[in-house]
Structure formats: structure tokens, C-alpha cells
Image (cartoon, rainbow, N blue to C red; front, side):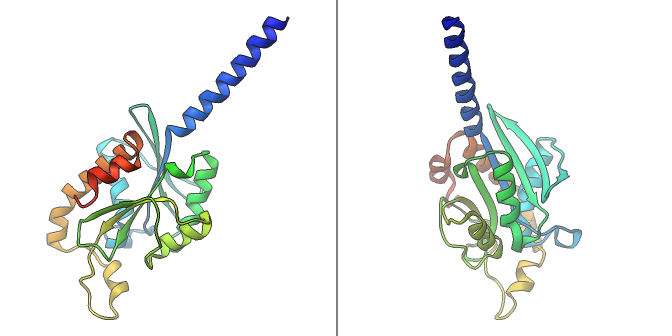
Length: 211
């Protein structure tokens, strides 16, 4: 009897440990953007565009679920949950917190993809913490998570707009020149997402920042 209980206890401990390992191999990748066809090709929607590119290349299908469109990507023993929030940009944090909690994903396994006016077009900056930089999607994420310490992948859209035209610019569509350069940048983004889950955030920053 004692042997049976000991074996059962060991099995439970092993199962619990396996679940912990599974959680550490699960990642939430969030592309920020606004829902609706009129926003689909705007600079502000680079997060959506990045995830759509990955989904297309890996033949994944998004499904509409609570607070966003979701799909799952399996790669090298890791599970990547790709989320495009349906809350509109200013309430992105609500969807992020919901899916982190629902899927029991640790905060360090979150990566938020967003546009950045302060970087030249196509520039990449991956960070583990920082301010919202005036970005409403990041501001709400920071508020809902109650921390500025979460991974973000900033994609430069430049600040080539005149005074008072910022909103029109970020909600404007890419120029022909930008469009022609996007495929290579989106491919780089796909590599970054995969690296984040397999090589870790620090190696990913060292490999891709400024590239």
C-alpha cells in the first residue's frame, strides 16, 4: 500500500512539473492594430500585418474568439498563440490580459508587436521594458498588466508628417516605396517571433536589434 501511495505521489509531482514545463513553452504573440477593412493596410496595423504574414506562410487560419482573432503555431516544441485584439488599439491591454490568464502564459513569454513613430521605416527595436512612448495600445497594455516590464517588438514607421498630421499619418496607408520593402521586413519579423520562443528574448535582441 505504501509503495502504491509513494508511486502515486511521485506521478502527481511529475505531472505537475510537466505542466509547468508546458507553460514555459507556450508564448503569446500579440500584433496591435485596429479591426476593419479600412485599417488593414495602415501603418498603425503593422502588428496585425506581421501576424497575418506568419499565418499565411505557415498556412494557419485565424478564428474569431473572445476579444480577438486567434490562431496557434507549433514550432520546435513551442506553442505560439497569435492574437489580433478586436478591442481596437486603445483597449488592447484588455485582450492581452484575458489571453495571458486564460492560457496561463507567464508574462515573460509575452511579445507585443507595435508601430513606432520614433524609428526610421523598417527599423527594429526589441525591448524587455519601457514607457508607452505615447502609443495608446502600449499605454493600455501597461495599465492592464500593471507593469512596464513586458517584451515589445517595435517596428519603425518614421515620423514623415507635418505638424498636426500625426493621426492622419499613422492611420494612413504605406507609400509605394514602403510597400516594396515590406515583404523583406515581414520575413524578418517572422524570424524574430520564432527566435523569441526558441532562443529567448536576450538572444533575439542581440541578433535582430538594428537589423
